[in-house]
View (cartoon, rainbow, N blue to C red):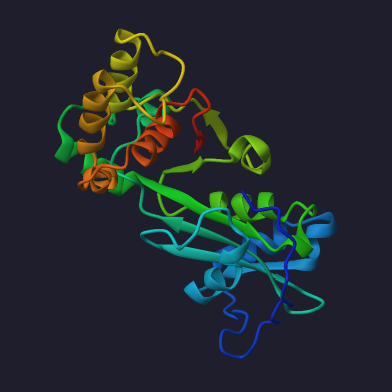
Length: 256
């Protein structure tokens, strides 16, 4: 899940501002040191900080940091002390249409409050896996995920990956891919598109019959309501809707 751009600035070695953890009881450090093999044995995986994420964020295809951060694991190159990779664990989003197919109950309940309690108690999300381009191809992303799954914060783990189909490290680490069905609002927009005879795509200059459906779609989520600011820029709204209803939706990986 990394942007393929080659780094344009030197990688800063780890300094005393966040030294490698030395506590012998650190479970992730113990598990990582015992699990790594081959080229990956040249790395130490241990708890990190927000500073580690910030240091590698420019190599990720998503701008900015996750909304929440519960845990950061970092990989340190033993010979140089450089920061080679990070994994970030966050709270899951409230709505995830893939959860019922993946795990069934308790995510099939219509009681939203009960579902939210179960979600926060049992699920965490791997929201970032970033490997510095100089250390790619060594199996480090797989080992970061595998190390976290050996001692996860919750019984279930998910990783929605917009570009996950281009990387197999989640599967290699033991996770499984599940389909991400369209949400109810996306399904309603698709139905409206088919009704007016445009089943394949969302046009950037929608006809009046489709504008109402697009506006209703945007109004149903806090993430897209801002697109309804007057005057509405229909090409921008249409682009967001097109990504949401595309048949090439993000892959979601879950464990167990």
